[in-house]
Image (cartoon, rainbow, N blue to C red):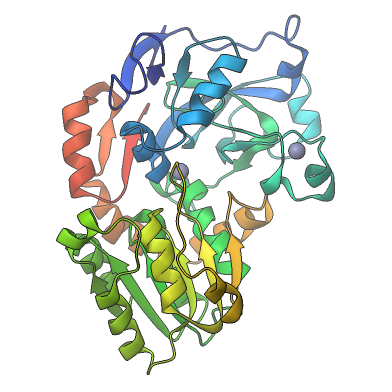
Length: 390
Ligand SMILES: [Zn+2]
Ligand SMILES: [Zn+2]
């Protein structure tokens, strides 16, 4: 048996529990006789696994409610292994893996995309796998990677080199890739950019907006500690959302924030705004903060209906909306790898020294996992990583 972080929708319940539940589960195995697809799967010994905004949404049960329950019902089971950001080593490979993928074999160090795409649908056949209509997401709609050993389709893996990128940062390829995907969707050269939500992916977005040549980056968040980090990472300006307002104002744009953004952009509004918090008010902040003809990137996800007042402004102001889901497989990964491998741009160092605080308090060994510990660390740090195995 092996240790894993899980949620059993029957015994724990979705609304009657909170957090992740550590359990002993069976060691995964490749069984090509009964499961022919295992010929193209591998067993990965997981070293590090990240905890991101979606995992926090599952921890507090505010996101993926329907997807989570629906997938389990379809698979006729109740237990889900959670987690989707990882780095580890391939310790067993199906009989067709080595002949199908150049760089995936026993001994490869790998990270991998959390979206398991079908390969059959119209979008997959066009090479637009990020919008596969029949995809499963690790740790949400299929079993994830918070376990000592996991079985994963080899096609999801991306070989990594610890000489170029340290293992703890390799575990963050997936969320870093979200930011790369967002910042390569629009041209930010010389642009004024507002980032609503300076959590982990918002922080990666600040680093990348700087790297790709934005002329002014304005970070907006309710948490002053996140804003202090945002400044260290290269945001030119930070604006704090009034915490008392954030609790009561769930829908409307924040007039104080918008006024400051107008001042910082000489009454024009930003060229590009990124919604990275997943709140209704944050979407409306983006709409209010963006100049006529500007671009809005929507990334944050939350269950339920959103309200957009004066919808006609969206058309009248001539915005372009971009919805960022996942990463382009593997185009985004290639860019992410190059950005992180270049030691002269300071991005990998900033992620490790500033966001991850060199591992001080941000890395939790699986053996020490407890709900109380994770809750405490979540409040202290934007990014947590579980050290699963040595
Ligand atoms: Zn994630
Ligand atoms: Zn597909």
